[in-house]
Structure formats: structure tokens, C-alpha cells
Length: 182
Length: 265
Image 1 (cartoon, chains in turn yellow, cyan):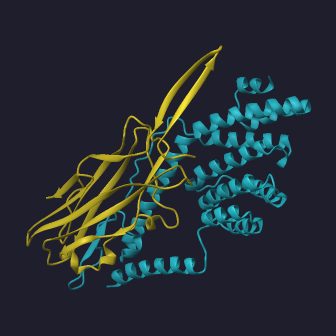
Image 2: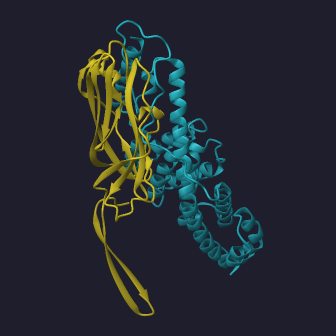
Image 3: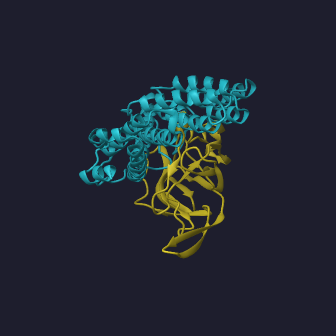
């Protein structure tokens, strides 16, 4: 099955009449997100963190990606600083493929080219002080099981703790949306 | 520290597994099927077939996904290779003989593999007796119709699942614990929290599988019914005696009276 952009002509013949219609087949280009519902409730000290639910839409929306599946690939954190340097980098590792063992975390888009995500982080420890990390998540898409995988723009997720003592706040951002606690 | 060691060892183990696979030439099954197909090696495809069979029933989802790929490869080789054709016959019978898994995670793959196998049997007419093929198609349509949930409301699923809040045990001195959605359960030290996270992931996967199945079934059933009707028309034209089986076929496929009458036309 072809998954690259190409032109196709559909020809219909009815009672001697021929009608030709040209279509351009497009591939997913980028994505946008809106927050879905309230942010995650605050954590109880000594745990701090933030989270949000996202509704993601793959563009262009005038093309149906009904049969397209997306996945986030595993990868390490970067820009680890402050309080997060107390934790080995191997423990700040985004590993979605491993979370379901030998399968993977492919998600099928719905009829509106959409899917959902839950972005959340937390850190527990004492004393708590500022710090953060980023995860630049590589993305792939494919058409149903077994077809070739294609590149898609990365998703940047940033997690940040600010303040110290009793004035700690946490923030997470992904796909240009963010959640803060408090 | 134990958590750190656990996550680190999981990472090292993964690297070692890939390294070992690479150095021993053990590519994933899908890649090896492609290689064997390109080389026209039925010997290698037979070995892969045995390996895939060993996945049943513990890894039924992967079993059906791999059988799908193997069937495609054998169909390509079978016109010019009798050994490939024989293996395809064996492989088709094996896939069609598997029951619908009680594990819903595999249901989508189950129907995909069965549909693909049946289409192959239709395309390669002499692989199985025509009436038996018709019965197999009817049985699969019937199973698919029984699996449809009317007025299905999709389950809310997410790309990443968030782990439960940690820790459940007191922190040690200078101990910091980080969690994030999409992390590996193996990186969670606390066994209770780790199991809760695994269950949340499993529930999410089940929801995805259920959503996919309910979304794909109606199209699949319609396509199969169309093919079934065409197949039966050809069958009854070539073998009018087979028409005596029409009641049984309609019953197996859960056809309506109108659909059954269409078969007989």
C-alpha cells in the first residue's frame, strides 16, 4: 500500500458517460492540541508535579487519516538540571514502547483525525528546589498494522519545578499546551 | 538506589538483547520473513512458521500479526514454488483452525488474519475445496457479527498512561523519585505501585484494542459479505449441488433471510 503523497484519478463510467475526478493523496503534516478537562489535581508534598489531558488533532483536517496510527518512540531526557540531577538520567527516560512489553503503543486516530494523551510528571524528595528536564519525543505514523513507518515532527515535553521551601510550583508543557500546580 | 539500578539494568538488558540479536543475526520475525521471501527460501519460511506456531496461545496477538505477514510472503512464492504452496496450505489451515481468543487484545488481529487468509484462499482456488472455503468464510462472518457490540461507545484511551503517585514507602535520605506518563513500569521500585501502573497500562491497551475492533468490524463484515456472495455465486454455478448447503452457510454466517436469498440468485 502506498503511503506517500501522490495523485490519483478516479474514473466512473455510467451508460457510456465517463467522469474523471482527480484526487491528491496527502500524508499527515503536523498536529495541534487542546486541553481536555481540568488539569491533574495537586500532589501532596513531598511530591510535586503537574499533569494534563490533551486532545490531539493531526493535520490537515480536510484529509481523513481514519486508518492512520501514531506512536511515540522511546528516548532519554535532555537539559536535566537542578533537583532532577539527583536522579540518574536512566530514570528520567520516556519508554512508552516498553510499557506494553513486546507490543507497542500505537494509537489509531479517530474519525476526526484525533487521539488523546495524558502528560504528567512528578518528583518526590526533600529538600525540594528548582530544576527540570525536557524530552524530545520522536514520532512515527503508519497505516494499520504492518505497513512502513514514517517520520513526523517530534513532540517536545518540558517538565519544570520552580521555587523552594514551601513555595514550590510545578509545570509541564507539551504540544504548546501547559499545566501548572499550584 | 534499587530503583536506579532496576531502570539501569532494564536499559542495559535491552541494549544487550538487541546487541545479541544483531550479532547472532536474529532479526525480528517480520524482517526475517521479508528476507526469506526475497531469497525465495521456503526452508527458512518453514522454520519461521514453526517459530510463529510456538507463539500460540500465549502471544496470540503477535501470532496472528506474524501469520498475516507469512501468508503474504507464501502467496507471492506459491505460483512458482510447490513447497511454498504446500506450506501456505498448512499455514492457512492452522490460522483458520484457531479459536477466537478470550483475550480481547488479540481479537482485532484474529479477524484481520482470518480475513486475509480467506481472501488468499479465494484468490488461489485450488488450495482448499471450494465448499470448505465457503464454510470457513461463513463461519468467520458469523463470528465477526457475534463480536459486534451494538451502539458501542468508544473507551477513553491515551497515548501515555500516568503512573500512580509515589512513593508508598518512606524516602531514604537524599532519595528523589521521578515519575512521568509513558515511563517504564520496571523503573518503579515499589511493587504495589508498579503493579497498579501495569494494570492501568493493560486497561488502556484493552480499551485501544476494543475500540479498534468495534471500529473495524462493520467494514470488515460488509467486505466479507460482498466477497462471500460473489464466491457463492461462482461456487453454485460451477457446482450446483453445493446449493444444498445454502441453509448451513447462511446459518454459519448469521445472514438475514434477504441475504440468504441473495446467495441463491
